[in-house]
Length: 98
Image (tube, rainbow, N blue to C red):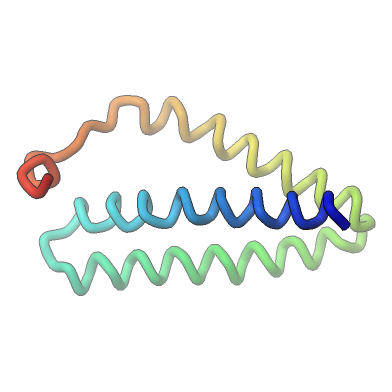
């Protein structure tokens, strides 16, 4: 039971750390705040819906294998993100806001 609580807490922390970054990335892409937040919400809910569907399909392999597959895909996505976003720097507008 403790392991499940720690796992859920870790996943929640990961979500809480990425959500503000997604909002920041999206708002820097557009000068229209409405359009930027629309893209943000679309991305968020599409990812949650598709992720749930894929995970439900993977449950046919068994819960343990589905969790390993999910974790592996998350690690691969994180590894791919590092070189893709390494060159990112704050925009002039973001620097002026802070």
